[in-house]
Amino acid sequence: MSGKSFYELDYLIEINEKRSEQYLSAYQKVLERFTNIILVYSAFTIFLVQIIQDVFLSTRQDLVFYICFGLFTLLFIISLVFTIRLIYPVEVAYLDKPEKYYKSIRLQYEQGIADPNNIVQSDINELIKASYILELEESVNTNNKVFKEKSSYFYNALIFGLLAALPYLVCLGYHLSKKPDTIQKVEIVKNKLTEEFMKKQAKSNPQAPLTTTFTDLPGLGNKKVIVSSPQLIKENSAQERSKPHNKEE
Image (cartoon, rainbow, N blue to C red; front, side):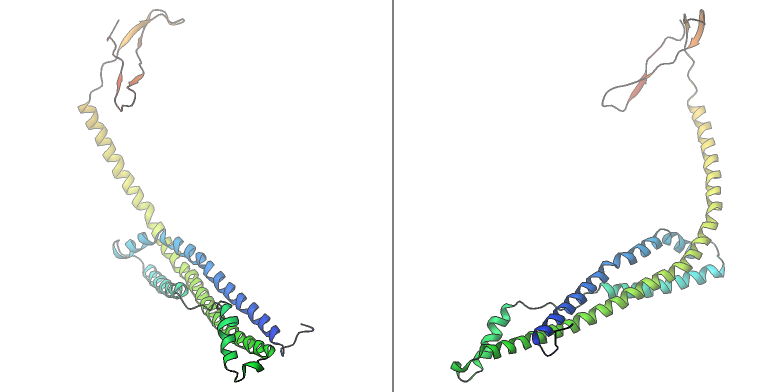
């Protein structure tokens, strides 16, 4: 700070350029943190459909469950509104191309002088700097406003999203507490259906007679053993068959 004066236009240009870049960078970082809100919403969607089914389709639930679901819905909608405002496009200030100053604005200042022979470049240069500072100030004010608004939207969207997680967890607890009974009933019905299916299969497909043969393997002597054959599958085909055997040798 030593050696620099706010009476110098060059210093005013320097600090305004830095502030404009800082606010623009901060605004972009706020948008990058939008993924944090998406993670919270993604966690909600895992059981949200099942919880909604419990509210509208299942048997009567406790009053606490309905209160928590209503509170979750309210907080989630508020968070969603702030999220929409966060990602809604706004006008951000970007500096114009430098050509405007050393061509257009410079010529306008020079044409405003009655006597072209009395043009003092240093004076015109100071005027051009002043015009540039005005643009920088407008850029800083615009980006500062955008940054503060978007930061507020992000904060509110995240806070209300996290608050909505509390009643959501209560609803999830009710849902999971009812789920084991349903699973057990489904498993009982499934086991009964499986038993009936196996009985029908046994009746419709009686077991084929076993094929036996004599063996001279060591330790067994001349005894009959049940023949076991590999499955023969034709290449590039889903059909399989067993090697035929004589019933008894």
